[in-house]
Image (tube, rainbow, N blue to C red; front, side):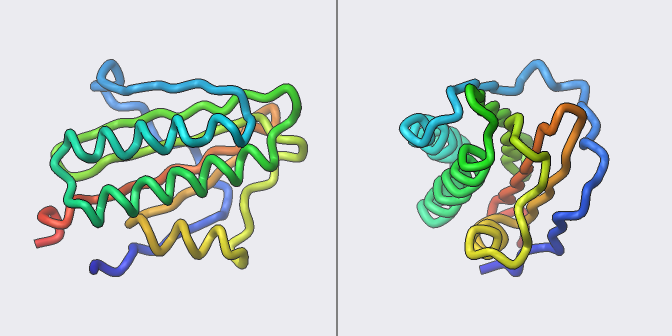
Length: 146
């Protein structure tokens, strides 16, 4: 298994939007735990269709579940959870965001953070105006590491 790259919970600028943003898949759900399985299922389905192996699919499914659950717990009511999926030839990127009560990013000393960093290759978090917290996950294909 590849060692995850360095992760950060320090506020950073939002990643730039690429020219192929038209190929993004966006999913917006109520910020309620009952809806988290929808995002998890979409992540798994995309990973399968992109020829990730079963371990990678499972890792991505669990990471998306954890990121969504983290933001649902912090969401201001009535809140929305936004998931954006972007695939390229080497990785699947998932950005999850929600307007939160206080705009704080997840702490790096939590069990949830350890789960995220163990399951994907990169994790970034940041806050934008209006207390919107973002978590970006990047899962590279194993063959991309070879």
